[in-house]
Amino acid sequence: MSHFTASFAAHFASVRVRFGVGIRRQVSEEVARLGCKRALVLSTPAQADAAMEMAQDIGDLAVGVFTRATMHTPVAVTQEAVAHALSVNADCLVAVGGGSTTGLGKAVALRTDLPQIVVPTTYAGSEATNILGQTENGEKTTLTDARVQPEVILYDPELVRSLPAGLTVTSALNAMAHAAEGLYARDRNPISTLLAIEGLEAFAESLGQVVADPTNLEARGRTLYGAWLCGTVLGQVGMALHHKLCHTLGGSFDLPHAETHAVMLPHTIAFNARAAGQELEPVSRIFGMDNPGLALHDFAQRLGAPMALRDLGLSESDLDKAAETATSKPYWNPQPVTKQDVAKLLAAAWRGDQPAF
Ligand code: NAD
Figure 1 (cartoon, rainbow, N blue to C red):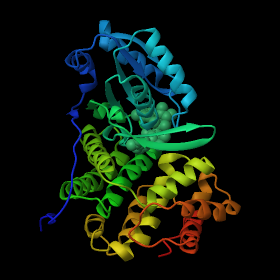
Figure 2: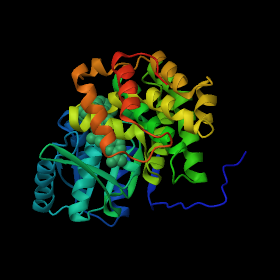
Figure 3: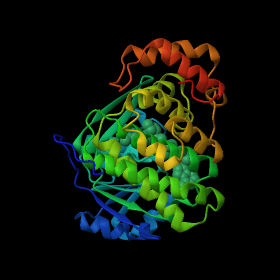
């Protein structure tokens, strides 16, 4: 059945997206296409070699590299990167990496309005959104702004080949969370629903294949396709309890981003399935179980994902504070949220049990 609804609003950013094995070597073309001549390449310290290689590929159109991108986009690092961009008179940014590097590019673009080319190396999906999370004085805040939306994305399956098996699975579940919550978003539209379903199907088909053979470029390409679709959903519609809980656990308890999404996803989807069973039907169908939360739990377990918050460093004594923080300023959610329910949900996720709802 079609996903048409009688009334909806949809918005689409103007983004150029290219896919292909080896496509990263065409960044210089994209720099020139933007009318730019002085690209600054960004990366994390761990991916400095990839950034250097990229700068070499770009050749005369590159003016330097800045390799200090950090998880959660600390404003102090952004200020250093802006100063660096101004000192070399950069006229565009090339971010090579996961959500942390993309986040730095977005934060610099917010302050300088420089155009961005993103070459993703994880499945986080930040490249497809106009959303930026930044950290200052220990507090993470999120904003949406058109200047933050990258203009060009190049998806090269060769770049995700080096993703360790653990991050491959958790980063994919992070992307799938955008699609799963997009299915029941209050402001969803027929296209966001189509994108979410296609994104989940892409991961369902390919994630097991890349875990079995990390060098399978066809399957790696399909996972990147899933990441693009799921990230686009995140950029189009509002997120709910799942993202709220992950932001709380990451922001207030410093839990790792992708791993936290991976542990929480089956629990939050099971919780919301009571109010949004029909909207979550594609999850049940794609992952092959009536209860969409149990279906995702089974999928994640089979792929070796972390299953318990206690294994990510959260102590049991923090659970009450986490439930309190997550419910004090709640996001809209299809299932009404109480602190008691969230405490029960978090306790099951902490122990690594099956979803409690
Ligand atoms: P990340 O970018 O921090 O990468 C994790 C680690 O893996 C880093 O050390 C990185 O250098 C390394 N790495 C990345 N790709 C690799 C590869 N192919 N091979 C080997 N190592 C690789 O992690 P992430 O999960 O991609 O991003 C998390 C960040 O992105 C968080 O800060 C999160 O808030 C943000 N995010 C933002 C949005 C948005 O729309 N604003 C969406 C999703 C995530």
